[in-house]
Image (cartoon, rainbow, N blue to C red; front, side, top):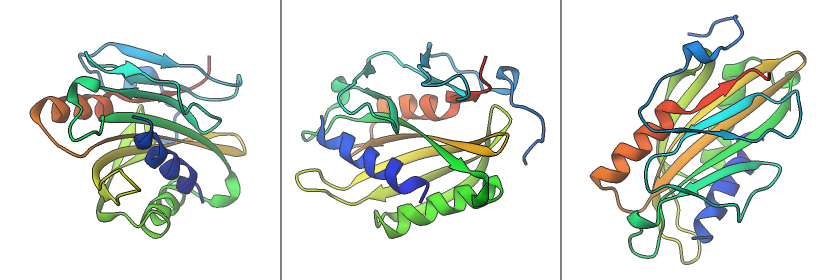
Length: 196
């Protein structure tokens, strides 16, 4: 329920070219060498999102929506008609879905059942002190878009009686050293921090 929309949106973009109870703080975030880009928020209650933007990765706004908050692509790495991209989604979910791990598990289940991804693997993580999960999988082909490798990190931010789930997903159909380095930087350096 949580991840289906986000995962579906990530698929659509391709056609267009140990948990702490403390509040997360930027000091707990992983540092990377790429410049950081702030993703605009829609309300004062939303957590702030930041993404590394390695050289050659450019902002694309074609599919921006309430769920898709930001996307980057690198045309210099285009292969076989597919441009590698990074897509950030943000969704607000009620506390009734349970603890952060239950929310992350529900997202994984959506990827497996609705998108029918293959070779799915996930591992617990933390993003700026908040509970998170990294995943790798093969997304199925869609129309003219062939099957592609994807890596994502999903993070849950708890705010009162609601949770926010942010996901950044990077994907390509042809791995190479430049993509591997850039995508690792994007995943490692993604940030979700409290509102100002």
